[in-house]
Image (cartoon, rainbow, N blue to C red; front, side):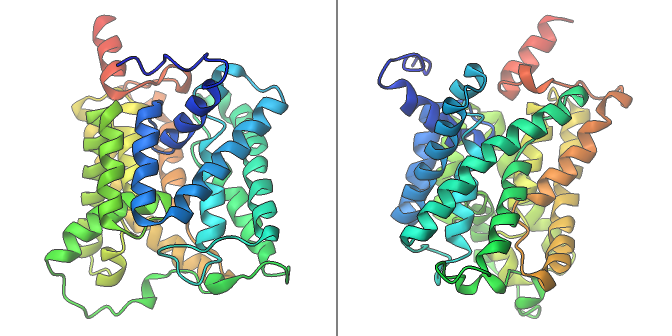
Length: 342
């Protein structure tokens, strides 16, 4: 099926771009992948699915109004951070994190503004990181998410909900035993938590959406979730946090980024990606403890920091084959082009 058929359509093109924006959260420039991922969110909560659409539409429209690079808009690259900002603002201000809550008018204006701000943050970070041939990743979302979540505590028109008590490893009983559900729920929910979905089935639906565009990316995402979950278990992490996917979602993103997307997939980059996934699990716990006193969640900061640290110096390591962000497509295509040139 030709997934580019509607990209330039006069009326359906915008839908195509927004669906790509959803997919780009997990590096998938494919509207069908984005649609299946949305269905994964819908399986868990129609509120989150709707808010994801609101966020990606707001950030994409901002890029269009400001006349950003049309190619980047069409690829959904101005949309994915906006989707995550909107999801985070609802997730961390709702009484029930699992399903979210319908935002108040004030919160709706607030999250649309946050999504729009992520577009400007993306452009700024891309300009700073461009000379290093490193992508902004989800750092625009992390930065804007933190800034907007901080401010919620000062505005009475927006209910902060349980946000002042962010998730930290020490909130879970450490003595609970690891059982079978710890593993399959922890691994599935690790994928779901990328989109704030505390639902392991939603996680596997999202994984299926990734596989529509790239089976290698889906495999690396699954492997990253397994590595993050196993690392936490081997080092005695709290069972509840492992089952909730909190140790695995950053690891899944790191494994996808380093395992074929920004580096050609070879044995060297494969083990490089797995090492990054291990460190991401450790760093989630470190950042969670660090941020707890100021009331902030980790978001995807562990993924961003580890991936940046492992990519900025990539040209110093001859065992790695870098893929510039502008040329990154899928792990399969990146490797095919590399082999064709050698």
